[in-house]
Length: 381
View 1: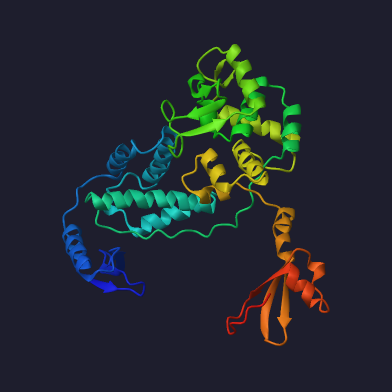
View 2 (view 1 turned 90 degrees about the horizontal axis):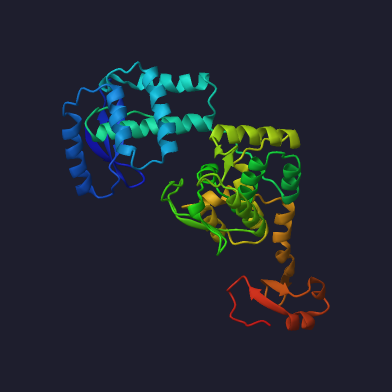
């Protein structure tokens, strides 16, 4: 076991696992002395006898540790994935898990027809589990998790105002039309909509406040959503006939996620036969309509509650005509070769037709000439 400096400048620990296979682990430092200390600690931890726990016991400890960091929905989803991995390995001792077991699990996911994105997500969760096990001395083994190649992403579907109008005309269920309309006009997530309570709505100032008090949002970011007149009128009508503290209900009871998704899918399939539209596409549509209305992307990210603006970029849809309009400003630029200096210059014109070979004086008066070559100190124009 030794340390080695790689081309990127970072020090790595080189060692051989129990099967005799060469492995490496980054120290995440470029400092030699710090790398030595990390290597010493790694040697001590690696040769320390691990606790004899089953895979199920480790998963229970890990989920208990993560419970305070996850929303209820995320916790349940991750627990299902770990249960699948547990059943696949027959709850063997975690010290007996090998690289072959990890590879076989990956093959198992492919056979179950999981998408490449889903497979990568599941493998990432399993890797986090084993990182936790390594830190807590449940195992000394470091496994390699190879990501699968993902398919080129298609642009997400979104509904224009005309599309949405068609959708509402075919919707005969008032409970359904109310929740999809307010979601379309506020950009709420499905979970946020069905857990919305009357305490979250300020009717006097016309806004919805998602404050992470009774329901924790995905990014745990508090945000205020202004209400349009249509959304305000729907909420006012529902408030006058409310049966409980939930804003959106189905036949007087809370919407179940699967029930709402099922009703919405039936509706969209009837209206748009060749389009795959989910309830979450209402959120995509909200973001896209704002961007197409020239709302700055930073403000859109704030309204959506995104921690990173990169997340917001995936919700926007820009077609060819928008790209064409965006490049029209470049038509104001014309390249001119000035013969007596040999310097190539760009002429920024108010009207490109005013630049002609025979009207050099007119060009000087109406254009700002920007030298591209700094070989001359002569001021032009």
